Amino acid sequence: MVVMESVEVKAAPEEVYNFLATLSLNGLKVSRKIPEMKTVIISSGLSLFSWGETIEASVQPSQTGSLVILRAQAKFQLNITADPKALTQRVKDALKERFD
Image 1 (spheres, rainbow, N blue to C red):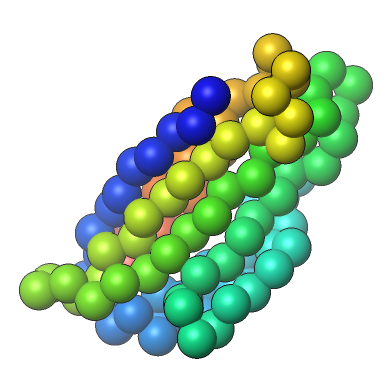
Image 2 (image 1 turned 180 degrees about the horizontal axis):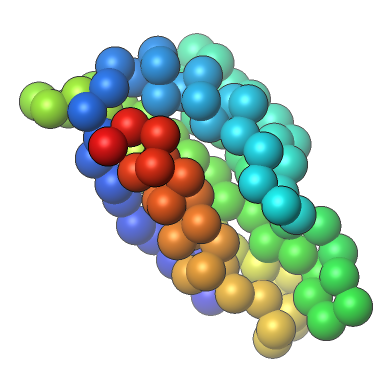
């Protein structure tokens, strides 16, 4: 299952990208940075019940600051315990906490 969501924040795209590129949430780590596209790939690790998830966060300019497009999915499609929706919400919460 792929979850796509977006969140708008009142900050410049470069500032939002830099925040995402250094994001440190329990169980999540930045696995890849693509600065020219202002995109970050964030991964959760393996656990007892899940093979993990990945989330791609892309930052675009918007009228009020930045639009962050989030695309999350399980690392393996057979991973029935993956919860990409919850992963997306954690990143959205971190963005709102930092920029609102």
